[in-house]
Image (cartoon, rainbow, N blue to C red):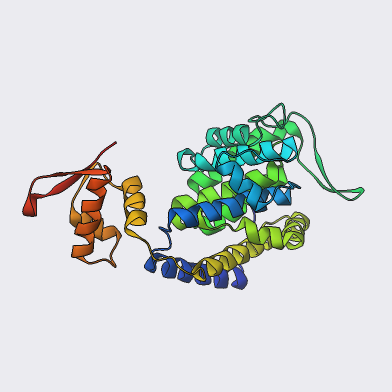
Length: 318
């Protein structure tokens, strides 16, 4: 049984806009941005997601931690960032449809911060707004089967990934499966669900916009709680995603260098490939540019050349 929500005209309009922007980004090869842009967006993602939870470290301090430099800051905040760096580094190894992966991610994300990291809660929790309880989560004994139902929805629903990612995010926040770390897990898992369908979302720090519209984020969660449907939250999150893609399209200087192309291709290529295979990924470059790229890849020790002329193939050096 699918969680309750309605597809409104606003949701349809946002899906159309998002789909158009993803197409524009793919056409410009912004789904394969430079390593520099990848790093910048990762820093923004970690900073924004943890700032929502009260982390005080700046983007400059997070950059230093990513570069393995020492910083001065609250131990808890430093640990939160180091854990987030670790889990984002492992993002591609996680399966968005697997509860095992979900628990593993929480274990990494909350290491040293809670004693039961990687485990569903064993006691009741309420979310406070000031002195009042804003949301009373389901009893702890219901959490495992509620989360299993939610993962079954991800596995079996034919709904598009854009909707499923929002529904999962809201329903997970409603269930509140952990004592702590629910907010950052909801945002992380939405990113992962979207990434598997649209690789560009590895580089879209939509947490940045959630951070800037934090009041709207909590209001959308509250409205969905009151209505018993994730519709309001879906509308909010799709607007966030749409705005994030617009920001990505507006980023200047995303022309890929030879090094950028080689770095990206060596991550996704088959063990053996041809120049034609290389050009099928980078459709905007000429055959002469492709040949120069591959020659540079050989010099850098990324590939080796086998055969000659029309029978030439390249092998990835591991």
